[in-house]
Length: 97
Image (cartoon, rainbow, N blue to C red):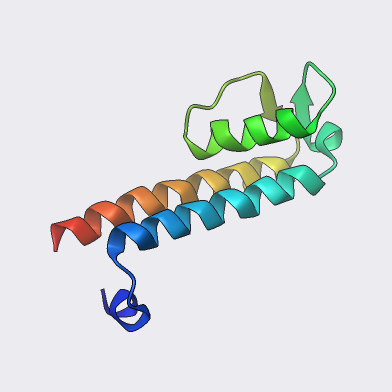
C-alpha cells in the first residue's frame, strides 16, 4: 500500500489507528447527540449507555435494547457499521499482498 509506505506505518498499526479513530469519532457523535430524540431506549441515556451503544455497533454485536428511530440515526448507525467493517476488509486485503 503506497500510502502506508509514505507514512511509514505498518499495516497492523494502521488498522489499529483507523479502527480507534472511527470508534472515537462515532462515540463522540453519540455522546453529543440528542439521544432520546434519535434513539429508542428503555432507560435514561447516560454516558455509559451511549458508550455501550457505540461499542455494540462498532463490534457488530448489535443488541436491540437501543435502536435508531429517526432517518438521521439510521444513516449514522449504517455509516458507523460500514466504516467499522471497511477496516476488516482493509486488513485482509493488505495481508493478501
